[in-house]
Image (tube, rainbow, N blue to C red; front, top):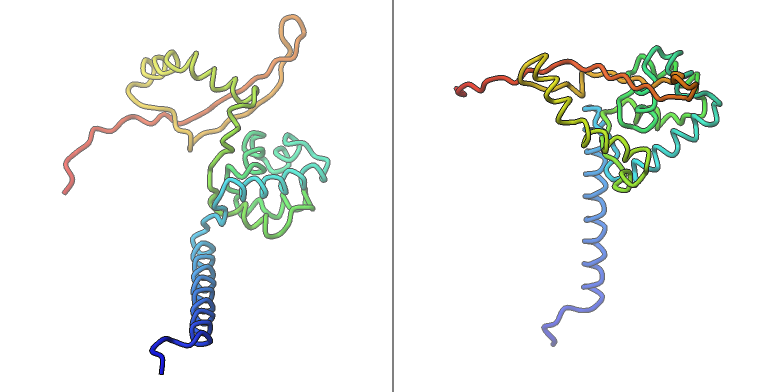
Length: 199
């Protein structure tokens, strides 16, 4: 009599373990989904997930025929914040969800719920290759040190908050009648705190 395990038994064991493994991960995924829902954490985990969500949101906006300015005005938010919502870089407050759904009816219910969760604030790695985006990088490189000096001269040692912060983008005519981009940033000053000993 051979001491080796019969082939059919090995196959049965492997299949059983495979089922157990799948059930374990399915249960774990359900638990994580429930925890995320309770904590309002984003279900977006990858750049690709985010790109797909943003694509659906922007397609729904396009279908509405409304501009960011028009949606922002009716929601009583800034146009930049409105654009942030559709790019899933800001959280949609529950009180605005119904209004946004009325303005943009093509928004899927699942996506609207996702917009109300704390977003995963990540960007496409190729984003900096876009000329319009790269100009802002150049602005920081060119003006960053001077802006830091001005902030310190007027406020002291600290920074401008990017959380307690508002930004708007508008248009104004130049001296020669050319169209000019006007960007206004308004952020709370955060002074640096002297560290003290921890208990």
